[in-house]
Image (cartoon, one colour):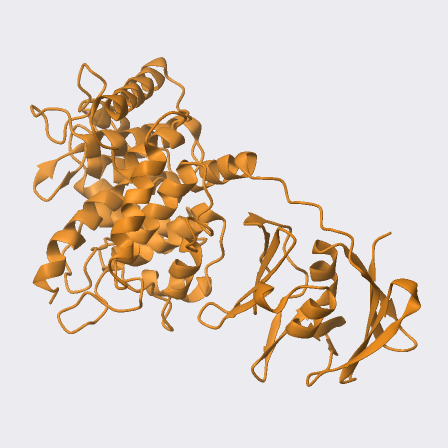
Length: 475
């Protein structure tokens, strides 16, 4: 049973997460009425940002960014800072709230891996449990009555937030397997593990995450989920959730269909009275906003979620991909490292020492307690000794055991890698993947020397006769 104190938050998370947008593989719709509806909704939110005495919720700014609108002179960053302050009050804050913050920070043009001294991305990565599920709460705890894990939507949201940040999932295979195992016989999903009844919103959300995890249009799980949605679709093309027809549920289904590779306005999803896109537009009011239910007034959540759906259909691009493009265009260029004093470093394979050659030819032998080795044609060097030899200070060498993350920092350059993974980031920007992943052996991390050395201004050579890795500074 879910803790009563968590129920309100959990229900809110379930509703808010419907705003997520994911890949638009189906052809984008370019009808003038769709673009006009998008612009009117965006104009409404921008006007509200100026009109009210507090920021909009982070998702409103994410929706504006997804629609290609400038967030300059808005209160987007203030909205994110407020959510961060709220999360800082509780070490067991919900994982879903941290994911919301990641999306908001990216939309605001900031770096979620280094936001006001906090690495939001690493916290989400560390929340993945041994069975592959991302925990209900960021500290790994669950929101069940006895602390058990009960929230499917926390898992879904974490998958999508990491995709948006361009960060790897520590164990993507297990994350996919865990989610697939949560599907009901009819193809539906539910946000709460203790509930077996079908839920439209949760099914749409699950399709988004399945798309991110590599389940495409031909996937049996995807086909079952889409068949379920088609079976419960209303005659006007829309969807009902919690007993009420609403744009939030329609938006979620649109995002799920796009993720699955289906056209939400296509023949397969067309009913006599319309399709999901036309049904969504029926909720738009004259001022550009959207109502939560027909006959009611403007609603910020309904407007932001409708805008996210319209932006996804219009652009044909995933929200995570659009935000990643924005982050790349606004990123500070990787600084050129200072010329190192050490001219050459020699790491003999199997030897518990390395030699440095400094300016003027001075040689110095350093003893080590772990030796380089060769595996699968690649030479691996202990991370600490390679880093120190490259002039990286002790406080610039970090190892996070929970996420198996190596972080090296020097002269404004921060390099991030993952033991067992091929991802490489420099100053938060994804680089071409490594052709040899860092290894964890006997409690020590060993790195492929070449890419690390090159990132800090060195080049690597291999002396076959002496079986030595030679790292030299660039002239």
